[in-house]
Length: 374
Ligand SMILES: *Cc1c(COP(=O)(O)O)cnc(C)c1O
Image (cartoon, rainbow, N blue to C red; front, side, top):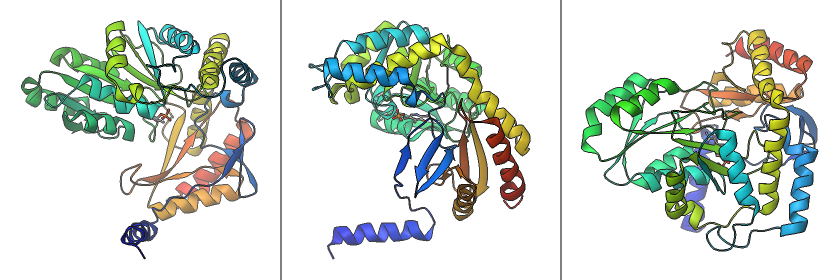
């Protein structure tokens, strides 16, 4: 066996031992509720399509029309010839939706996060980041080569201590967090972090990938989000002032050196904004469903459409996921390194169309058969 294959096998063996090996499971999604896996039809609590827009007829029609008009691929980077006319429309609509001066669309949320911090901070600068921030935010922090210090999850007091001790030694500083945390569903203390940003002349960067309405956040100058989750399409974006957006378009490598998004996807994202603006009441449904669930399951009241059911050990979380699968629910187990050691969990995400009766049954099973044994 080659040393490369031997290396791969050893790594995989270690993952197997720790119940941390992952595999791809072919999953069919043919409507906005159910998935098909291993020949079973399961009600999904593991999709991030919170508003059910991925299957919305208006998005499908917009995507098909864009393919007919513009073709399938963008053909080049946006800075060369890939900036098809739908981009300008989407960016203008996003800026309007966010209440920012301008917006810039990236190939994905991950690419946005990998590209933005390195364009704003360099080797001499400081990044103060919440310890539970998404992998893509860490990628951006590392690529920037700035001094990166971690504050305890949602503890703005700890961030204040770090800034007070280190800020003066660096020309620029970024404070980085998620608006709604992707694996815990809790919310960052944004007013306190914005106050710190003012006090220490630091720039607050918030990833709102899971904040459904991305409602105006006046005090946040760097607002990142995704088109891939609640908006049912694909891509990432930054909302910011015009000078910041212009700088990003000149400096973010993940924008400059990557092909533009397919026109169909950009058209679908525009159609998603149309639906949300026409039917704003949709935005409240996932949280209402999540709260009905936490009340019935005896868990702390949900703060967002994401509810963690923390189990502890990875194998126990896998067993809980299998138990729910046998009952007709999909709730994928989330294990380290996605979450800290010893906090493997089911991460439930609630979406607008899930029937209340099924949510009640899920809560009953979680309360009596999963949490009682955890
Ligand atoms: C999903 C996610 C991303 C990545 O967005 P994609 O568009 O899926 O690449 C970034 N940040 C957070 C917090 C996320 O949950």
